Length: 237
Ligand SMILES: [Mn+2]
Image (cartoon, rainbow, N blue to C red; front, side, top):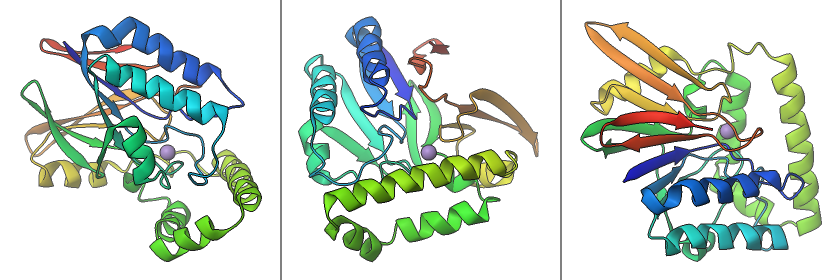
């Protein structure tokens, strides 16, 4: 049996290949998978439950198929889908995880995160995150008409794209000291996260201790998953 960890699928109706890739991952791996962890940015954007369309229905059906195969689903919010509701969670029957979240994969203690909280050098982003997570602003946003929410989400995506293109990419990356502080607090020496879209395997040696940070890839070029088995872990593409 295996545990699968994925993130940053950025599913959206304009790029149906993302959802198709999730179906391919299921066909190849779900039969031997006990748990699927989705570490945020599952959707490219989420503007409210009333934004119901055939693409979202198809995505719900896909997740329900995983469940029917006996796979337990876990979801952590990213910065794109932080408005996903409890109702949606009920429909797809996934368990929501706080960020960060400590797990044990076959006896190995691991810390999971979306990752954006650890990009602590990016002050402009952290300011935005702080506002976006305030409950009153979320209520205000969700009270707007759907067409306006879609428009705001569209312009936010464009702004984020422009921002990513202009800002120094080191500034937008995980701050090692921030990650180490979390790991020490959680008594773990392995962190698995997404968000940065810079897949990699980082080793850090500090105070006689080795720390590992695994960065998951986004899904803009097909599926990408961390497969964890009793004997070890590896990536599959
Ligand atoms: Mn993200």
